[in-house]
Image (cartoon, rainbow, N blue to C red):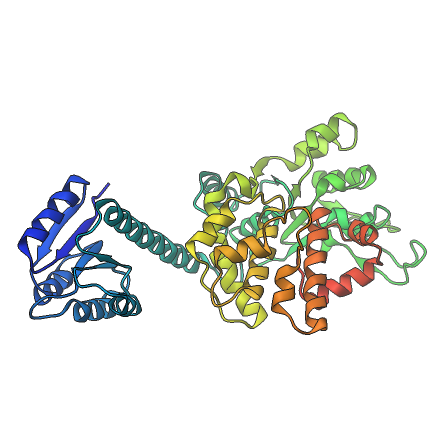
Length: 458
C-alpha cells in the first residue's frame, strides 16, 4: 500500500525537522517547504495527500496559500498550524476550506488524529466520486445497472454475461426486494432477443382461477365474463422473453400447463381447441424454497428441472453491505429527478449508519428509505437524519416526530405519514397488494389508488 505523502510548510527549520521526524516515524512520506511561495510550487509540481500549513510566513502568508491551493486543488486536505492562533483566524481558515486548525506547540496525539481523520475523509470522498463515475458508466439507457462491487454481485454480472446469449432457461432465487426482476431484465437486454418484448407476470398477484387465462389467453365466451378474446402473456412474449416472477405461488394446474408449453413450444387458449406455436425464452424467479415445496407436493419436480437449467441466486442486502453506498448514491440522484427535487449529498457518516441497518426489505427497502431521506432531510443527508427518519424508535417514542417538525399543514403531514405507513405495510407483506389491503382494512382498488397517488412502486 502506498504511504500517504504530506507537505510540511513552515518558516522555522527546527519545527519542520521535528514534525518530519515524527511523521516519518508514523509511516508517512514527508516533504518540506520553507515559505508560502515554495509551498505553492511544490503543491503544483507533486501530488500530496495532505498539507500541514503554518499561518504566519514570509513572502506568502499561510491564509493566502490556503485560499489559492484550495481554489486549484479543492480535494486536497489542508491542516493549519499557528503559534498565534485565535478564534477569528480559525474561523477564517475553516471558511477558506481548511480541514482543521491546530495551535503550536501541537499536542502529538491530537495532531496525528487530525491528520488521519483528514486522510480518511479524502479517501472516502475519492471512493464516493469513483462510485458515482462507475454508476454513470454502467447506466445504459433507462435500464438500471446491477449495482455493487461485492463478490456475490460480481459473480452475478459474470453469469449474466455468460448465459444471456444462450437460450438456456434460468431460475433466479432470492428474498423479496433483492433485485431478481432486474437480473432478468439484464439477461434479456444482453440476449439475442433484446429486440423482442420482455413480458412480466407476477404469479403471486393473480388469483389462481385467472392465472391460466393470464398466461395462455382465452376465447370469447369460454367462461362467465369472457366477453371478448384475450391474448395471453406467452403470445405477447413471442420472439422475446417471458419473466415468471414468484413462480412458487403458481397453482399445480397452471404448473402442468406451463410444463407442456416448455416441452412443446405451443399454447392453447382457455376455451380454444387450436394449438398456437410460440417462440419464448422463459426466465422464472422465486423467493420460496422450491425443493421444500416439491417435497410437500406443492410444486412439480419436472417443472423445476425444466426451469432451473441455470440457477442464479441474488443475496440479501445484509450479506453485501459494502454495496449499500453505491446503491444509495445512485438512488438519491434518480429519485431526486423523479420527485422534482435537487439531488443531495449523503454524508459518509450517514452511509456508514445505513450499512449497519437490518434491511429485511433489501434493495426495495433501501429505495424507500433513500426517497424518505431525500424528502425529509435538509441540505444534505446526515447521520442524524438516518437516526430520526429510518432507525427503529424505542418503545414509547413518537415515530413521526420528524414529520411533526417538518410540516405545518395537516394535509402535508397526513399525506407523508400515509405514504410511509403504506410502504411499511407493503414491505411487511412482501408487496402482496391483496394481503396488505386486507390487513390494513381497505379495498384492494383503494390501496392501488393510494399507491398511484404517492408514486409508490414495487
